[in-house]
Length: 271
Length: 271
DNA sequence: CAAATAGTGTCTCTAAGACAATATCAC
DNA sequence: GTGATATTGTCTTAGAGACACTATTTG
Image 1 (cartoon, rainbow over the protein chains, first blue to last red):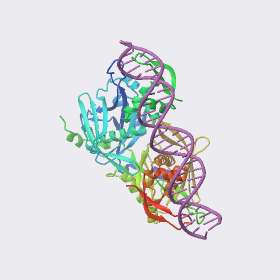
Image 2: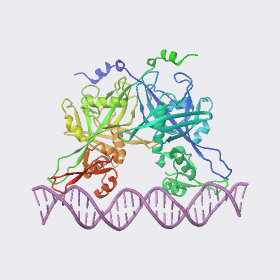
Image 3: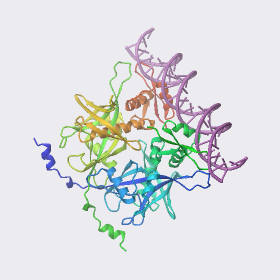
Image 4: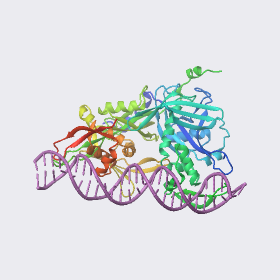
């Protein structure tokens, strides 16, 4: 009877071909714009963090931060390490959105990507600034279905405008995949990863608990509402929104003053 | 200026260490039991497909069907190929549940697993039988939270009883991971994979569209209801259930007779 | 007829949508 | 005071849960 120990001693994984494995992160943030009038509240924008590729392949094109899995770390750890290295930003939360494993997806060879969505709170970005990471930028995001049922993903940063075109493929189980019709200048299959990430993020944003990851510790209910509306691209009447979140937040005794209108109470997450 | 072509010609992925990649599938089925009285409807059971490991490591223990990713296939294709090879069962739908990449999870070395949930309709199992796959068996599933907040996963097939104990870890974003306290005789970290798969399945089963993957083309509304109740481990009043699904199904002109009570109309999925 | 499921109708309660009304501040 | 947002309250409606009642079959 051969023991398990003996078996393992003679076992060699290297006999078989193996893929390289990467983690890519679609990191989103909601930022407040400049206000259009001294007493009007600021508008919000949904932003996505991209880096400009410095080397081949897809040199000079924009891509999601990410990189190769190293021995001794989990894929989540790899995702966090890479986004920190490449953009100096550290996410609050990571959520898997899928594995992209089409054999031809990377011109360098057999490379599969584990994609994650993540969320950055505005405060943590102020802290880090953009020192050594001048090739990392926040792009403003628009993701809509057009008349003919295709999805248009538009990412803009200053003069740079990336416009990708995708179609949706539903496979059983409510699983949807996006197929790239036009990558719009994004590297690899990252347009499809971003579409999947956005779609997952919008679903999650129904859950108020997810929104807290985008908010500072104390926030007004209007800020809360604007963040959800920005992510989900919908709008709710303020009175109804307050009622719906009332079970998830608790009052503080602080107020935000000086905005040319009634001061707003600051709330915090309950528990 | 070096061209992308030149770069790729000189590029060698093999310089870096790479993990082996597997796909594992938690395949569920809902089966009807023998009826306890000639006129009573059968009870339903949730079943999970496991295979008895014929080789090291974990020889003789039970595990999820799965295997190594091969060059030229996607991970979904790998999952379908492996479950077909090992159990001769072909799933209707596949849904990713997560990637398991803890460095120590497999004693053979650096192996990461992509886990999928899938659903088998009872009819497709009758067809295949269990010819060459006598080491593949359907285990009846129980997954409950006990008094102290831990999860108990019990899998039984005849005399074989596997009882795993797990704790739940919530990380931001509504992502939950299960940590194994006692693997209950399951190979690798498969107890945690099964817990994640069940938890994902139960969430999805709120959506009636998911349930259709468990059903034959024509079904009674009671069958429909029993399948959902079996998966989700809840119960609904029949009248209310009929109202809720009325938008998802359409009548046929056929009835099921001979059961010692009023015949039930067969329905089919709408569209 | 008895046992069992199939199927319909109705009452209630809750949560969401619409909208009106009041409160409070900066200029 | 004016313009803007903050905050509260009310009316309505859609949907889920509870439950009662009728219909239909087989032994």
